[in-house]
Length: 91
Image (cartoon, rainbow, N blue to C red):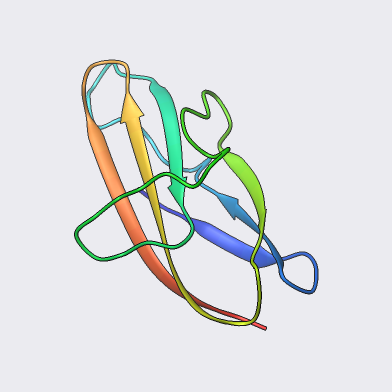
């Protein structure tokens, strides 16, 4: 899975998983979930960012500047699932 991000405002970022593909040969991405305050070992979808069907690009405004761990979970229609975790510096 590939996650890209870019700053689009003071504390606002855009996250993109549109280059991700299904883990299964004939699978299609069916669900994308985001955790913008990820704690290692525990994925908890951020309110409003769970079950984002067909939304491969999202925007999120962080509550303040600092270092944040962001996780994205992508599921396909055949049971495949992948999670990517990245640390970003919000300023």
